[in-house]
Image (tube, rainbow, N blue to C red):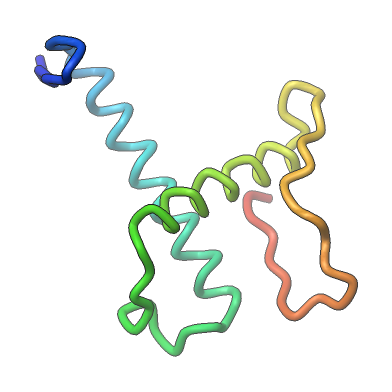
Length: 94
């Protein structure tokens, strides 16, 4: 059991939920690293000094794009405008 203290009180999280959260975070980190490598903007990811908030937001956008590509729940989510000239391309998932 993991306890998380917040201003709203203490929340008790079961170990299985804690492990699921960690697996999801690891997956998001892997996807974000994959996309950053695919852009070719950095010689190596160790050279990329990006703010944590940016990386978290990028991971969320990538997850939405994956859902869009997979047709999750039969909905289409316009994540971003597609560039007219693609400077790079990548496909996550399939």
